[in-house]
Length: 420
Image 1 (cartoon, rainbow, N blue to C red):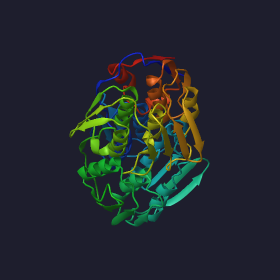
Image 2: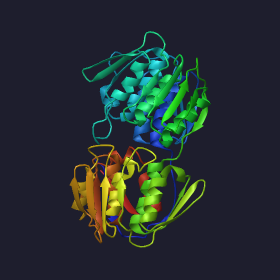
Image 3: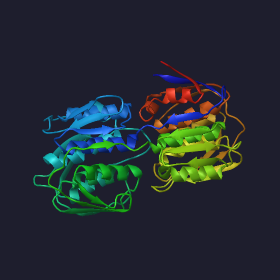
């Protein structure tokens, strides 16, 4: 397994960095592109292992899915490939593989897939996805690690209440409902920026969707969709990770191509911690003012503090002045980075879904292991701040979600190498 070798606190951190397209927006939009037979072009698609896996998965269904350069892909699907048993190993690599259920069901009335994989951050059942499909008239069959969804007639519009504002379920139901007969109303829907981007994309294809970004989304079914050219929104989690690096090291950073409105909760917390920031329509400049002050954080569905930045801000709190607390309300197993941070000298105690962090003056470089995507990012932040050299192992998790991460860090002054 490859690893990062990071010389922490060895050089000044700061400069400019261009934020890539959002992985979490690209995956559902790539899946939704299968709704049309025509060639849809997606720009600003980050070149990551997750997006490459999604392209491979689309091709296994009979779709055309090609990257013509580092940031653009072409996708279409006219006829599904009949395969009784899809490749479990391929699908298990990507939680987002579940998103291709909706276009296949909507267009062809049948889909059978392995249950999805992804990061081990807690139970993430797809019952809400299936609840939505069932409400629209589909029949569900599960067993032997697979799920099969069938609708002999066309899907029918329905009112669907989500027990939890699940991002994936909201996306899957939205995609399926675009070609359903009648109107679908999703109540208690997720409102993340990625949901809004998906709705914009679908409407560009000819869908009729309103309310995206609120807790009630209305989709009026149409008979067909057409091709479009769409640019993926910037990655708010990548932007937040670099801002946290800046706050941890004390070096000023300017994010180019970022969307400030997508990371308001983080900016508010960084402001509480003593950082100054300046925002424009497409950039964010952060100016730390010495050692950050400890704060309390509670992860919540959008517009609350995102769970995907919980691990990274915990790294920041380990070197903050005072005592902070983090409460994780989204995933029950998202504290796997804590033992690794403690190996670096952090003082963290946990009680249930709460972590109590006592800030220390400095962390010490050592060998740590990335257990999932965001945990790996958090350990990288800690290693950049720590004294001495750190090895961050199992970086394939990190490479799933951060495009050109090493080169971007190098451009900001970080001394970092990759070794097998």
